[in-house]
Image 1 (tube, helix red, strand yellow):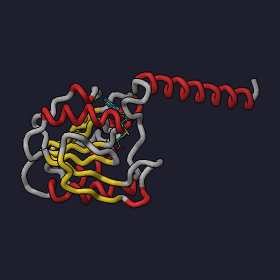
Image 2: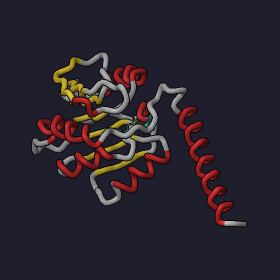
Image 3: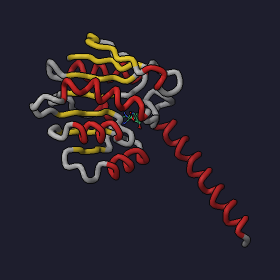
Length: 189
Ligand SMILES: C[S@@+](CC[C@H](N)C(=O)[O-])C[C@H]1O[C@@H](n2cnc3c(N)ncnc32)[C@H](O)[C@@H]1O
């Protein structure tokens, strides 16, 4: 077997794994209803940090939750900036879940759960950070309306939430992915 054969075999193996992963995520996403793993751009992270600052700078402990936390880049950034609070990320896809677990392994105040975020409990949450999708934003909005305590804040990247009054819109310029709305929407329960 030549080096060329070995390289070809490895490339084919990687292609097959990726293909199966994408088929798995497409089926899991109920044909696109639930968003796939598309991480927030690093340039938008600063805007999220600035927008969360007035709520997290206060010296009062809060539970911060991210439904569909991907590789936990947002939770990690917020936990670095505001270590007083507790952070929970829900992620059901194995690849981002293990990345998130690895990246936050040294953080005592960050918990990553492999769980469907529609089945989570949001009744003791002070801030929700969210980068979901048009369809799931509707369902999640109903769930958050039922669960969240009065005064809780939601920061939604690119997607509007029905059922809540928007208290702030923050432009993220031409920094967003694809053709998504370059905005953060802030809501108060
Ligand atoms: C658009 S990505 C955003 C990732 C991360 N929040 C960020 O901004 O970088 C959405 C994530 O939600 C996860 N997800 C979608 N539906 C979910 C569900 N019902 N429960 C848990 N995670 C879900 C996907 O696997 C994906 O990683």
